[in-house]
Image 1: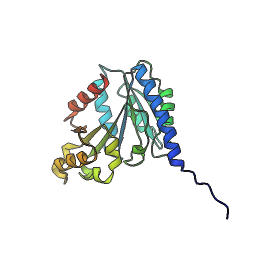
Image 2: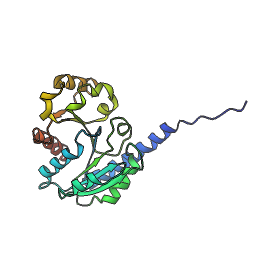
Image 3: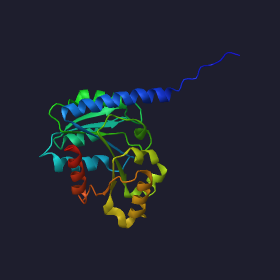
Length: 219
């Protein structure tokens, strides 16, 4: 019987991706550009949070946004209305962005003169966490209606995140969401990571999010 060679493609692909991601990070650092990879499940409020954040920071920072989605340009249009530089990335059915896709997006966006670039990743708590995009930092948004057990169900997302944002705190009275239990669950997955409760709708807590971002950009 012939012997069949088995090749672990996933490992090879991830190794190549990590190499590209490191090159992207080094290039952005040289240019003084901070790249934030923003991840969440669909409906958690990434775009609404991003619009609010841009409006609070645009007088001080030059901001660009790459909106990733399987199809449509709805989110990119919303971002463009804030005055931020914005492009839409179509993933062709892919449920995540990798480092090569991010590099292509950065080339299309153009980073000259920008202080902050936000990559709004595809809405998904699984695939985006597996691929290093070359971002300076990773942010994860979860929302109150999703429940406080998300860190237990999607551990990798919370392990790769540098900050966790809890959105839709304005509806806390109507949902069975225990904030302390959530923070404890996050701590189990990523000890010491900051958790920032916000309401992108009302603006509650947005000052803390902006403060965290400004601290990271200035480093």
